[in-house]
Image 1 (tube, rainbow, N blue to C red):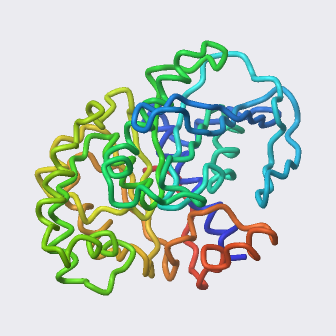
Image 2 (image 1 turned 45 degrees about the vertical axis):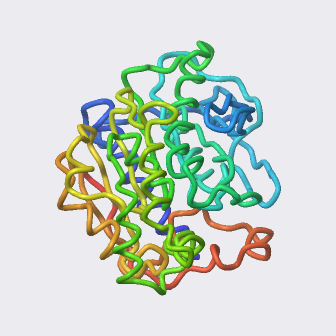
Length: 336
C-alpha cells in the first residue's frame, strides 16, 4: 500500500523536526533507540465539557514490542510494558475531525522507539463515534485546551520522567488546526463566510455554516464563537516548543492571527488533497508564518495519506479513509 511508503517518509521528517527543535541537533546525530515500545490507556480531566476524555501514551520500553490488536488497529507495542528510565521529550498528537486516538498509532510508536513519550487523545464531541460538537466552541476552541490538559496531566505524573523543556505537538487536519492554535495561532471565525461564498461546494468546511445561514444568523453565530475564544483560558501553550502540522484546516487564519506564533512550525500536505484544498489551507498560511521550520508536499497524495496504514478490519469498516491515490514518494529528510 502506498500509505506505508508515505508513512516512512513523513515519519522520518517528524523525527527530523523534533530532533532539531527539541534537542538542537540533526537527525544524523539522533541515535537513541529503545529495545521496544509500550503503551497504556489514560483518562484525562476535560476542562471543556467536564468529565474525562480517553487517550493513549506510547513510550520507550525495556521490553520487546509485540503486536497488539485494539479493535481494528494493529499496534506494534506491548501493553503496560516497563518504561525506560531517564528524561524524555513529549509529543502530543491531535487527530482529525471525526478521528480516533489511535489514528496515528504508528507515528506514536515510532517516536516512542526513538526515546519520546508520544501521547494521543480522543477529542470529545469530534471523534469517530460522536461528532455532535462540530462547528461549536466546545470543538473549535476546546480542542487546544484539551491538548494543554493532557500535557499538564502527563507532566504531573513523575513516572513518565518528561523533560518539560522539550515538548512538541503534532496534528492532522482539524488536529493541524489544533496544533497551530496551541503554537499561538489565532483563528478568525468570520473567515468561514467569505470562504464559503467562494467555495460553497466544500461540504467539509461549509456544512456547519449552512445550519445557520438560512436563518441569517451566520455572522452573529460566528461573532459569538469568536467571543468564546478564551472561555477556557488561552488556547496557546508556551510549553510547546515545536509543531508538526499535517494537511491542516487553516482557512480560519490570517496574517494577524499567525503573527503571534513564536514556535517553529513544519507543514506537510498531500498535493492532491480534495478534503482540505491546499490552495486555501496549507499554502494560504505558509507564507504568513514567521517561524517556519519547513514545508513539504507529497506529490499526487490525498488527504488521508497521513493516517496509519489500515488493517483489513479497518479497510472494511472505513474504506473512504483507507484508500489512497497513487503517489510519488520524495526522499526522506537528511537535514533541514
